[in-house]
Structure formats: structure tokens, C-alpha cells
Length: 165
Image: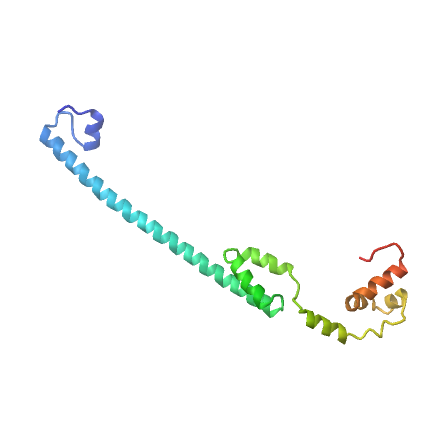
């Protein structure tokens, strides 16, 4: 049997090896291929397992962060129960995005609460006062907050042709 120098190097034999030595070298190489195939399958399984562990850990971490963000938002009256459930689903893998969204949201107030609040604000301290009187009394910012429509009307009356800031 004629074998090349390259094959001899792979099999770990010399050019002058007899047929029996070549046959044994081929059998040994085949056994090594089987062993290496088994080892490769084991390593692939290990990689798959580790990837799953990483994914599971990331999912658990995200879930904790999202729960904390949503708990905080609800405590601050920033979201409703319905919105909480939707945000938990939509941002399940993106706590940073959820945080950015929640930071940009103001406190939630139901329409009923808003109407009740408007009905309880006493605006009599502003009645009949001019822009200058409210400014001198340090009341203009409170007036703007408590009666945005009244503020806007007084601003336009005081500064015709301009829009309030």
C-alpha cells in the first residue's frame, strides 16, 4: 500500500510502515474520531445549557427590575393597574426603555379626581386682581397652576397678541 507523507504524519507512522501498522493506525484514528465526536456533542450540550442559564438569569433580572419600576410608578400614582399589565408585557425584555418611559410620564389622575380637585380649588383670592397685582403678591405661579384657563385669559388681556409660555 502506498501512502503519502501527509497521511503518514496524520496517522503518526513512517513511509516504511507495513500494512499491519497502517491498518492499526487507521483503526486508532477512527477511534479518536468517535471519541472526539462524543466530546463535541457533550460540549455543544454544555454550551446550550449555559446559554439557557444566561437567558433565564437575564429574564429573571429583567422581571425583578420591571416589577420594581412598575411598583414605584404605581406608588407615585403614575400608572393604572391596566397600564401596568400592558407595560409589563410590552417591556418584558427592556427595563431601560420602561424606565425612560416612566420617567417621562406625570402622575396619573382620573377624570373624576381631576373634576373633584377643580371643584375644591378656591379661586376667590385671584378674583378681580390684575396681572401686576398677582405678580406683586407672588401669586402668579399659583394662579397659573390652579387656573390655567384663567391665567391664559389674563395673560392675553394683559399682553394682547402674545401667547403665554
